[in-house]
Image (cartoon, rainbow, N blue to C red; front, side):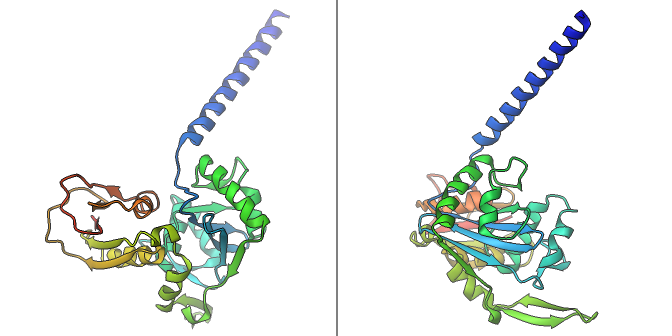
Length: 295
């Protein structure tokens, strides 16, 4: 009898300990600030069994743009040569390291836009299903719990009041081709750049009239041009894209930026969405605008 009572107490202690650990993990996750700002909005990749959509959430402007990617459209794998159609891309990505980031980066570089987050949902590929999935603890996403709570609050308002605009990539921006095996597919062309500058803009950033100079010192061809396309789609002006820099030497790795002025939303986007590090100081010799280095 004593042995049975002792085992019962041990089980109760283990259960209590598990709940404490779970509670601490939830608190830790919620304390992470994340990337979502209801003043700026966010662009997300939404993946389901039925395909891939892009959700452009703009709470301040009171609308949600929902873009379903054509299933036959090919996406180039980021930092690779392989290409896969939309309908099989997630099956490829989930076998790789960091599949959510890979999906975001690959679609982002294919279209030349900023897509800092991704989310996997079950069932239909709709705004309503995205909204219903955000409260699930087991949700596969790189958004923090704080992000999801704030995002869900804004989506409830946008979806319930039918402030959703469903659009397609213009046919003029897609070229139909056939591979050697006779399989037809779609490939984006340069016209997509004109479309993304109108569709993916962040109004808060646009209002700052920020000018960027981008210096690609990474040795990887095309990185500066890609960042230029992404920032212009968000609403910034890019004045310079160069692989050389004649000014004061910059030390570090990855994406760095410096400014002598304050561009709150542009800097927020660079830091939170593009993972760039601010190296500005009082002694920074920068004219009007922002200097960005890719190292």
